[in-house]
Image (cartoon, rainbow, N blue to C red; front, top):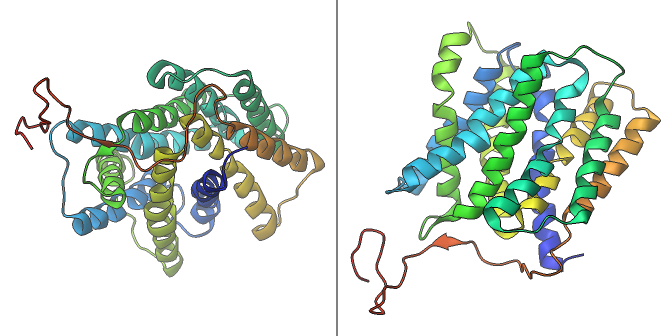
Length: 316
């Protein structure tokens, strides 16, 4: 399939959606009820500010709007739309619609990155969507139009976030932790006005709430997004998008192990199909070598005179 190094990168990157799969359990068991905006803001903003403090570096030039756009797409808007859809669509249908995300990445990677659309990836998309349907669908349920639009919008946000991060890379000399901090901060800041206007501050916090928020900030944001953005740098965009399908699998397994929920034969089959889709999604382009390379950074371009200049125009 790939080299050992690429398999290891894919496995490490897959830990991020595995951690995100625990978010539903943490939210329902440890966090204040019915406060998705609070949970999403606390998940992103404190960790982002800590990473900004440690990195001691802010975006420069074009990276102000690029980092803001990536933060909104990958974190702020995506998480808001995800929680909104989950509250309006019963029976896990939000996860079914969100499973269309790899299909969006396949199309966007062809348009923005020049990747070919392969029949193998189309098959993996169909398998992933079908597996999630088997995993979470519970018979016929009414569909809320706003919930469906939010789920589709969330899938598009993640797809655009993955392909844009792959296209832009990160600026030269900026570490991955600092780059992650930029995005977490931007994603958290965009949610603050919505949180304060629609939910407000909680009346009190319990010990369980503190544990839940600590989990979201550390594992659910700083560490998971660090390995996720690292994977985007080192793996093809399509391969990364299929790894996100591991999130509903982990969520279902945790519900079975921790909350005593039932696990049917069809759900087990759905898990197997999803894992098959993830494996197919890691296949490399046959006509285009994509080795596991060091992080892509943006460097200055050489002018005709042979001297390289920085973005500010100063020769170096």
